[in-house]
Image (cartoon, rainbow, N blue to C red):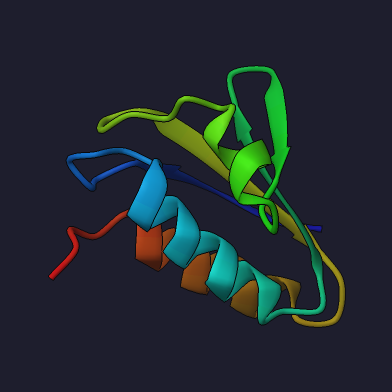
Length: 86
């Protein structure tokens, strides 16, 4: 299992457009990917599930992945959520 803690940077947090981008990217990997905020887990491949975390700008999230492309998945998703949208 690969995991990485990141801070949510987008101003709108992990809602609507950022969540959709995150899920779309997550679905491109074969690994099982979870996002954890406090003690709540969410499937990174489900927009609705991800938005239940209520992650806002500045929140700390833990991205975990298990599978053949886990390291690549965690790095790509961490990069996505920890940079401001252009």
